[in-house]
Length: 223
Ligand SMILES: *Cc1c(COP(=O)(O)O)cnc(C)c1O
Image 1 (cartoon, rainbow, N blue to C red):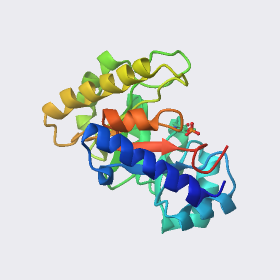
Image 2 (cartoon, protein in one colour):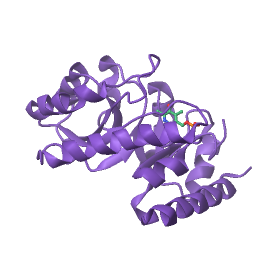
Image 3 (cartoon, rainbow, N blue to C red):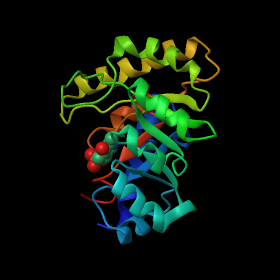
């Protein structure tokens, strides 16, 4: 299927989810996750109107970024090794996988301008997933105050690949309540307004529950 058709479909589903939850579709940023696909397919996504791209590996990110440059905003969504920070930090618009102090320290050191970061939370508790335990998230974010180049714009989570809608909703709601608690602290370096949650399998539910950034790969550009 061509990307434009997929995107039309996704936008219709977002509109439906927004209608159900009384939200404005303009609040939702679609991040096209291109980690599985070629440069050509990535360019097709840009031509279809995708303005935000996500990559989860350094090599894929650099390859795509070299070609596409500022025709898109760039989101680094995968586990980021500290020693690779310097290669991405000034090329990305946001990092969605901040999950440890050493990474924050490296981001802070390798740039001169504040970087928008999402703190990754492992809400589902799956061992295979990265991220902070929900109960550790607020104290972690409080410790980030010392890093003037780390700006916490939101929280990110990956739900398990399951069909159980009630379970998925409970994961998304948990992230919403954590975000609300952090936002209530009114930390100047951590406005924490955004929620990066929802992928191909579950983005409609994530939008109904309050996602502001959805990360869609297979249903948009294919896998
Ligand atoms: C691969 C990936 C996605 C997109 O997954 P799909 O199920 O193909 O939409 C989203 N977020 C992260 C962190 C990923 O690694």
